[in-house]
Amino acid sequence: SQQGEEDPQALSIQEGENATMNCSYKTSINNLQWYRQNSGRGLVHLILIRSNEREKHSGRLRVTLDTSKKSSSLLITASRAADTASYFCATDQPYKAAGNKLTFGGGTRVLVKP
Amino acid sequence: DAMVIQNPRYQVTQFGKPVTLSCSQTLNHNVMYWYQQKSSQAPKLLFHYYDKDFNNEADTPDNFQSRRPNTSFCFLDIRSPGLGDAAMYLCATSRGDDRGYEQYFGPGTRLTVT
Image (tube, rainbow over all chains, first blue to last red; front, side, top):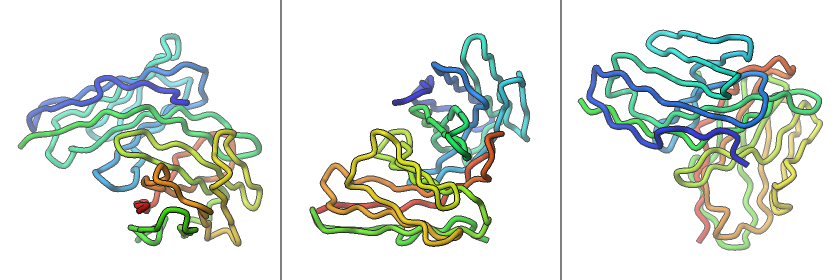
């Protein structure tokens, strides 16, 4: 079952604007991760934020995590046409002996218009 | 350099005709995962291997099997594909401990069932 719900489902912005998307989840987590998926391709890891962290930055990306509200947000600043993609949050729980189970949200489709 | 390679990128099979998808990795990661992603949906974990230890998700149909002959390779076998199995199949790898690491995804194999 889907652990995370993402909001909005789709987002259309002009190049240079910021894009914000939110993710809510239901159960406790170890970490939360964000991935990007270009159309018809595999997923690319963006950021991993641990449950004891509140904010993390990577280049033009900023992720926040509020474990009390079971929510996270991804902000893309100064967006570019190349940022057009689907963005997924994934809750991360240790899985049996090893490895980690990612349960993905439904994704936000972002269109950045030149 | 490609780190997680999936072959073929596109596969067409007939209803009921067995099909095998392959994944290889150059990362020497302990854990390999197979996900199914249907159109406009989130990836859904089918199963994963920690070394040779196979772990099936509870809701993965029996029609789906997997083999991991060595660290580098993993195969997804669909014994009798139905129309509902048409999807993108994603292979991913990660390091094998419960601290939580990003997963590295291949480009996916898009399966069409006719």
